[in-house]
Length: 354
Ligand code: SAH
Ligand code: SF4
Image (cartoon, rainbow, N blue to C red; front, side):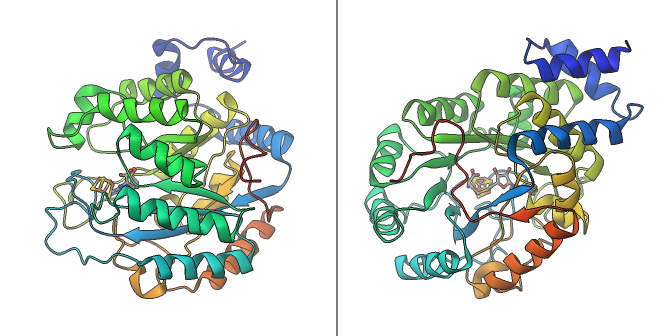
């Protein structure tokens, strides 16, 4: 058997993968039979999930951020960023629209905005939980204290998305100012897991300075963390950041990583992200065909969408929520899939919320 097939079998078998094993795959990706790999990953998705694609309604609650990540358009040093935050009523309106459209997961995402104290956030989460007890609530609000994560969980949050961004210290320091650390990011992820959240980690593909060795460590870290969700998307430069002139990640590299992740983590919830749809008009479809099984259309109010500008040319900023869902439904049907109306929990967490 070729080294390629031997290693892919190893990935899929769940047996330990050394750094050198991941590295070999990453270094040989240009010459590998990638269409065959994508088909193989897609077959795993079909075996585990059929043709149903889970949807999450994304509500971008704030474009204020106290952090200064070098890659992100919302970083505090970006004086050109236009800032807004949604009120509790606006967030509840988004949920109402979403519920009617068939969303059974609401993802509240934002910059690290001190306005959303534990008290305010718990009030919002518990009200969503009270109104929609059958919906799952996902938070993506960055690094908070253990106490904060605990209180939010008690208020009704089920899941938390916190990409680790890169599992290599030196690379983490290239992407972030000194006050942010990989150690703390990882600590937050392990805390969230311990508190009983369904946890999502992940990274950008093609972020500035990223090497194959760094990516191999990302796979190793995911093996260690065993998250329920993995969010990966291509790095897309933003014109008002220090990385404005850096090249973005490629579609092929992102698809390659998605496929490897599906093989390694057959049951993981793996979105075909907006970033992938931004760099390729068929990016999300291609992501699904390479093993992804989640899409996250936007439920944010149309008038704030453009302001939540993590990177340039973000798609779907002008659409109503209903249009976004309908358009995605059509795209999924065109590739033989359909959107589901369910919470789409990770295995073992299905009873949550009732
Ligand atoms: N503030 C929270 C959530 C919002 S940012 C947090 O940082 O966790 C959500 C994700 O957007 C980040 O994890 C990052 O991976 C991604 N992101 C930020 N800037 C990006 C860019 N320029 N290209 C692609 N993804 C980006
Ligand atoms: Fe803030 Fe998140 Fe952007 Fe970093 S990636 S600047 S934490 S919104």
